Image (cartoon, rainbow, N blue to C red; front, side, top):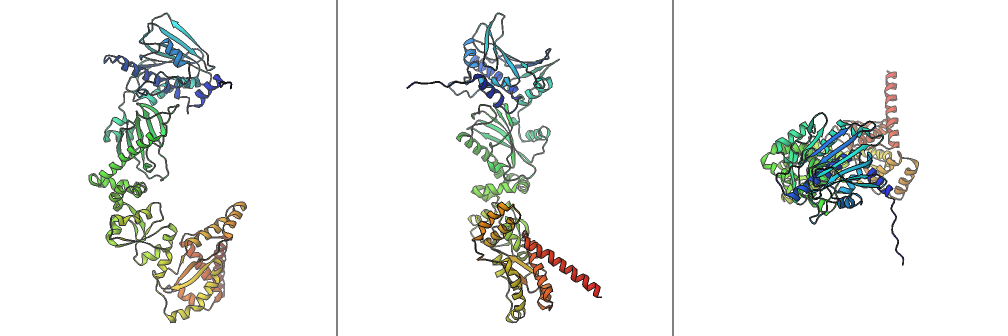
Length: 594
């Protein structure tokens, strides 16, 4: 069997890596700085000389046609053999070692290719601390390069010259280069000097992850333009991560993904990276410096592996521990945080027993008696009723409130889970799921004589409501001013919603939804409960005007749907329109007959 070799279009490969690997052309600035920082780090390790001081110098030469960027470091440099090995072979790197290269930010060979985004030639002048002469390497995007030994003496280190190609001059403007050098390298441990008329150091600022809480909050306000609730120190020994988590001063959606500013060994990777904090920590944004995680080839994210997952857990625990200590140390701050971010705290408490026990009494819930904390519920009630859907809560809200029954709206995400978990910390507390049907069962029945006088009325109401799969009943309940209450089962609500949706969507989707429901029998119906105590209902029972009685029953049915926040089907909209028209006509006719 004959062996064959893959053929690689070198020019196409370089174009792919240089023009499509990175998110923005500005990244070439970061790659050049990374290489210089790693060269200085390597020289420090090799010499172990405390007198050695690494530095990086950057300058822009205007030129006659296009500007040229010059960057120089006094790092370890490369020998002639290393130049052939690492600059001429894509995928090779001078930064691998037995320890895995943890001290270095990037990979030299691939990173240098980013320069071809903005330049048609890379001029690389270097001298290794182990060599007596300098080397000039010139590389082009077609994969060719030249190499010359320099006769003139060159100091150990590396210089890179990039001349802007047509259309990219704006990336070589002095203000632009200085801005991006500061953007990527403002917290690097070695001085970055930018030369124009003067020599300016661009990176003398203290890093946020080295600040205390007061300093970090001041940094957030002045630099990030946000007055955060608090700053939490983050740390993971596993990933050698340090940072700050800022608590947002405004509520965000549970599924919101916060963008984090992330550095690798003090070099900015991205200011919009996600997935570094647990999903439940959507109420926080962070600034992180990472030394022990594997970077992707573009150095704009980390490999999403088991190690990153463990680091994510460590960082999440830092936030949890902060919240736990607030219970004793600063309950006022905790209350402020919960008021804004209670949704996130609830999400945490459903899966973390320790947090549940600490925070459940502080968490607010929507109830028939208003928005109150679980502590207030437990203080005033030995039995906790709750619904499992928002629709059910809306149906019984007014009725339960009038009767002084505290019912929690458990229809919001996590709420019913938290309520059901309550007995774990308080076995004396009784929790009971309640439905609208159960509420109506608590209503008082009519006495025989009252049932007799309302028989004809209820019979008529059932005839009118039967096409809408609704049954009419009459009972006594509070409040008296509420004439009717509409209740329904989950099955009936599903069929109702499906039918209503089918009326609004395109014919194709409408036919699909009709197929879904056509074989389902309406085994359960909704219920419209008339309030015997209500004055309007009393007048309706006793009226001899059959047309008025019919129109009013239809209008009360539609009103009950609207009060329960149910969207109206087309036939119910017709009822509303016809009922209003009849009432207006009746009123105008009475006015004319006076």
